[in-house]
Image 1 (cartoon, rainbow, N blue to C red):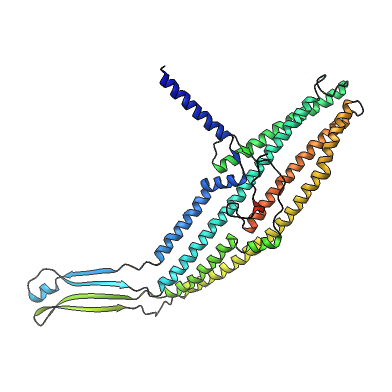
Image 2 (image 1 turned 90 degrees about the horizontal axis):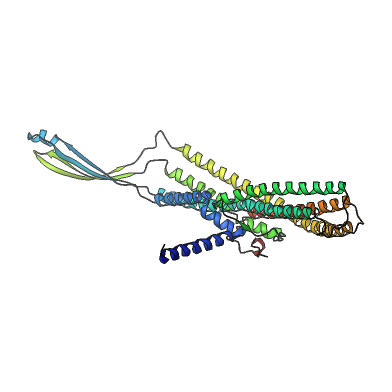
Length: 426
């Protein structure tokens, strides 16, 4: 193999290795996860397509109907002069006149487009909430796996003799109890690994990340305190769901005017020219005709009634959405405050004392002052408290996602640092 080929292979391998390392070291935050989801999620592509449809409808709403051309050929002239054959005896151009209908249609289509754009923002909020759920689930699964591995590592230390501070003699019964602790720790690791793999698969699938890629996430941390409730209520007025309902109502109201303008067919004006046989000779006749529908049997009132009912429906939907959003925001805000306070209290009053007791019990057991049951109890209390604290942190982040969804706050467009979940890598 010549040197050039070897050099090319080495260059390729270095580039490949660098890309793999870069991929493996990618540090995912909630913001970057949401941004990735916006790029690959089919839900957003569907919403974009809906906006495109409404744009096309708006363009079409202002289009005039096409004129029509009428050409008539018959043997009337040939019969009159005795020459026979067929001649073109009539040509006419007709144009329907939409009058005020186009303005109403344009207003309706414009409001429908604005509603679709607001619905797209609402879909973004829903997708952000979904991403947040899977992101925080993966954060918790990763934290629980790390905690389970530490628990196993600690249980393995109890089995050593001579190399550990636990230098006191262990009876067979004590060794059996410690072996139970070890086996339980192994089972905890197995369960945590399974839950982590499931959470990672769900997260990767949502973000269209290759399943073989390794992930690195920001660790769970304390939840930031949200803005005051009055500020959130004020922000609620610009919620995409409410904006979508508002524009849907405007579109329905314009639909009433459209229905009224369509009660009767558009009047049609026709310019025509005919050939006839008069006074023993051919003569051309030119004229203008106006076609107007006579509203004798059908006033098309049903369409107007239907359009008005759609207005009432849109009004009711808007009130329902506003009620649900306010209720959910209030409940989520109260629950979030409770979770933040509960996590702080749990950390200060339970986790930290349990950690201190665990350290002191470990030393007391090594010195022969405490029995094996005290050590096992302190061990389980500490790791269980740590696990519960991590669950409280995750529940707080999930509730913060609920607050954002109810208040209409987007991670990609919010300028409020209160709701930024970007966490610096420790």
